[in-house]
Amino acid sequence: MNDTLDESPLDPAEALALAERQQRAVGLSFVKPVMVLYTIWGVAWLVGFLVLWLAHTVEWMPWVVAGPTFGVLIIAAIVASGIIGSRIGRGVQGSSEYQGVIYGLAWPIIGIAFGFVGAGLISQGMSTELASLYFPSAYALMVGILYVLGAALWNAKSQLVLGLVLIVLGSAAPFFGAPTNNLVMAVGGLAFLVGAIHFGVVARKVR
View 1: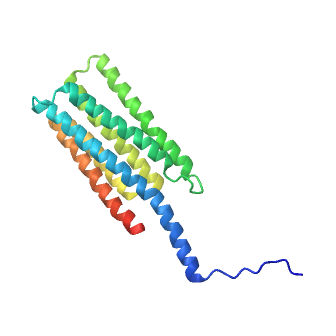
View 2 (view 1 turned 30 degrees about the vertical axis):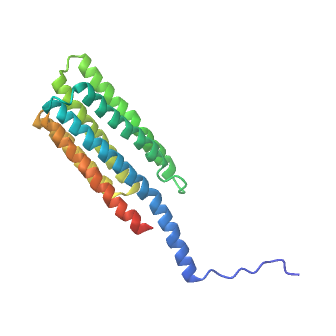
View 3 (view 1 turned 120 degrees about the vertical axis):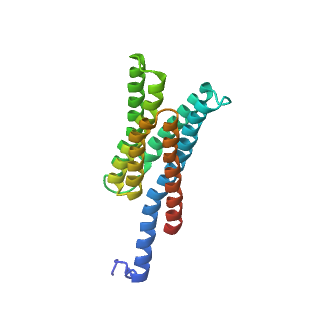
């Protein structure tokens, strides 16, 4: 008696369709989180820096509102990046999950480190005007460098472009002085939102 079950070979068209579905699923696992991250950062970046600029130029936006608003927006974006970044590639075989966890943890760790450096400089006599130049550029460089690293990890050209844009903005903004540096930095928010729109289109095509 033959106990072996006969299994008919998978039809080539079915095999191709299965492979395409798996490829789309993996693609969406990367595209959708990046789209969400870009949206979060775009809103936080654009609104945060415009609020700082308004605090310098109009009376109805006091610093006691602008400063905390900017801080809350950036901290929320950093936390979201840590959570979402650690989940990118989860379930994908290989080192992707490990890379995602390390990349996600890097966001809050480096963000806190830049904050402590700024606080240390203030304690040593750095003026409010210089602090208003330091913090925007420091966090622009932080986000830009992390996005460049993310581009290397996941072969994402859009992250490379966005990271380089933020590095350029962060390096150039101090030369404009306060409060114009905040308008320069706000351009980064627009770049994030353009990236989010791009990934929204990509996600729709992948589906």
